[in-house]
Amino acid sequence: MTAPLHEAHPTSPGRRLPDTQQGMRRRNLSRVMHTVSAEGPLSRAAVASRIGLTRAAVSTLVDELIRSGLLDELGPERPNRVGRPGSALAVSGRGPAGIGAEIGVDRLAVCVVDLRGEVRARAVRHGTNRGRAPGPVIGELTELVRRVIGEAEEAGLWPAGLAVAVPGLVARDARTVVRAPNLDWHDTDVGALLPFDIPLTVDNEANFGGLAELWLGEATPHDFLHVSAEIGIGAAVVVDGRLLRGTRGFAGELGHVPVRPEGPECVCGGRGCLEQYAGEEAVMRAAGLEPGEDRVGLLAERAGHGDKDVRRALRGAGTALGIALTGAVNLLDPEAVVLGGALSGLAPWLLPSLERELARRTAGPACAVSVSRLGPQGPLLGAAHSVVRAVLDDPAAAVAGRS
Image 1 (tube, rainbow, N blue to C red):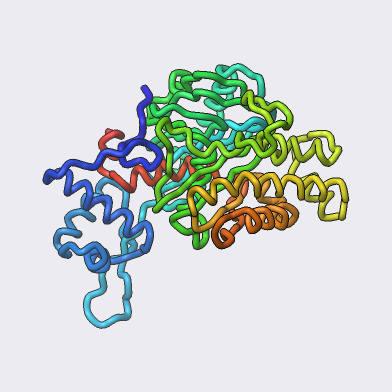
Image 2 (image 1 turned 60 degrees about the horizontal axis):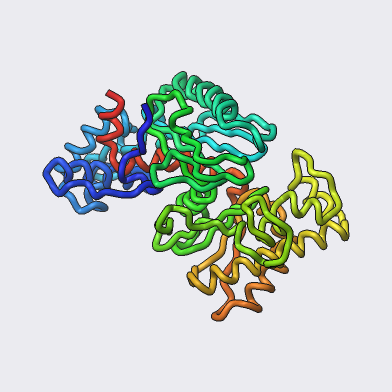
């Protein structure tokens, strides 16, 4: 059986917990979990102070979370202070964990992240998935998921859910890939192909990359445009700390914004799309290089050694990115643009022409551009952390789903 993650999951349509006594208890359990996760270890008194509940009320909630295996007591918080020390609380390194998976054009990847945000297991298979039928690809992904779940269970973890990042448009049901041009997949129900009896969410890889940047990035603002650039180019629009999805959930298809309307034909059916100038394979062609497994590594090595053809190709890619981003920046007025994905490794040669185009074309002051420290790992980490966040948002539901 597969089902969307709990309604509080940031990548799915949200429904507020009911305003009942039970709903209030669930919200308060979530407040305790988020507080300890963000600031722990903390004593009960410190948690009570931060969330505005009485110490007695917090103790009741904490006891329930300890019994459920979500929190651990570590012992006295400050053994040398005057008075009776409180017992420090921390999020457990055992219990529920998030399984993140990524279906890329040239790789499959899976990881396990515990409630502390630590990656506890990882598996990767390199090799092209372009033009392959969904069944065999999902079959290989299934084996990787089983492998990391086995490793996680040996460490005392159990899967609270599975989130899968894909390079394409995903329907509002959070399981059907409507169209993935670089895979040549259409109307593919990923949930029907996966055999796991755990909650499932499928989403666009750029959305998961944007969420990873929001949750794990350093000093990332709550209003930004995250660009995830590899073979394909996608974007996540984050407004006030939430994804802007659009009516059908397809917002952020930056790679298919035309930068030269009479340019070459794109796999999407359009012409002159950004991917034809700034995607990995497009940059390799412009540099006169044959595509290989480590395209970004080869481009960075050649650019670092002063290869004029490679540097010219990267300048052209940066210019195309700047042109496409100008429209989004003028329309949305984000606080920042964050360059993520594999092409973030080429930032020293992309950014000058990208920033020049933005400064020249935007109506207002130049928008700040930064590079994600997560790089190509962003979508995979965002997928796994989305499950973890769902547990923190509603720990009672996560534990009930296990029983």
